[in-house]
Amino acid sequence: MDKTMRIALIALISFFFAVNCGPSAKTKELMKKGKDMFGTIPESMPGSEKDTPALIELGKKLYMEKGLSQNDSQSCNSCHNVLDKKGGVDNLPTSPGAFGKNGDRNSPTVLNAGFHVAQFWDGRAKDLVEQAKGPILNPVEMAMPDEATVVSKISGLEGYKEMFEKAFGAPDQITYDNIAIAIAAFERTLRTSDRFDDFIKGDAKALSDEEQRGLELFLTVGCNTCHNGPLMGGQMFMKVGVVNPYENTEDLGKYNLTKQESDKYVFKVPSLRNIAITGPYFHDGKVTTLEDAVKKMAWMQLGKKLEDVQVHQLVAFLKSLTDKERDQ
Image 1: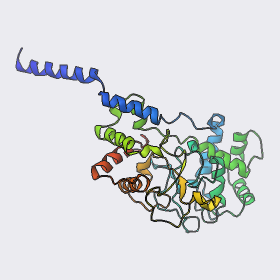
Image 2: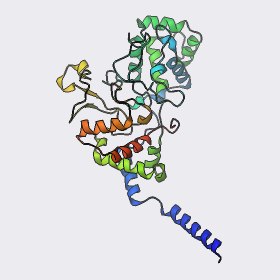
Image 3: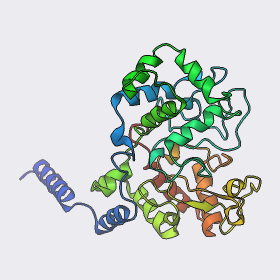
Image 4: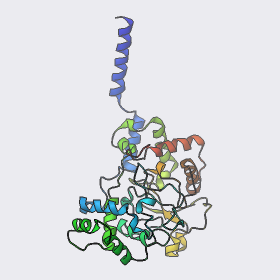
């Protein structure tokens, strides 16, 4: 056997063992831990079983409709951009409303929002339908004066009467409730799928070695204490600054609703799915980079100062949570 053939044979044997040996024991353990701890994002959102193509189509049109704002300048998509591979946000610290005034809180992503325990940072809306009604009448956001004005305006726009009739199965169906119902139906289609899901489903190569180290660190440091469940968040409320306080002491969180002392600085734990494309971070949007967010959260919530290499590994893992269709 000549030298060339020997090299080819060695390469073939090496390839055979690489393919057939499969993932290491450590990788297999991580895959199991990830599946047991988080699980994959469910295939459909609660309530979507009743959504029809006609309702979703109407909801998408309304979601993009700037006529839902008083001066025709703002749509739902203005602050929660789902087009062009965007992450369901506007990537601003806080969002300008119809007349230029900014809100007090960062616009959270609408991606996967239908899986959350409640809507808004303080949980004041129980579901997507209730949430959709808020910004339209908010004087800082879309600034419509009342429900009747909204219904009258949409009724006068071309095509909506027919679309509502098709979606709801009867004439004269343009109501404020139905507007919100349709928008929510579209939002329930905004489910994402990422490489971490692939990993815990059995694709060991879906995460790089560095990303796997980040996952392992995520579990050992204790990030999963609050960022748990399939969305790695969105399922509970927690005080910002459990161990060490956050600099912003002006926004009192749920306390503004409940007036209970225990709710001071309490906010909904954000989902980490798509976190790499939804910055800036925190309820006030004052943390610019994911690296700074990771360091600050570890210090405030866990009392831990992370080394740079740990931050780098955690961020690498968090980037694997970006929707594959939006990963840039």
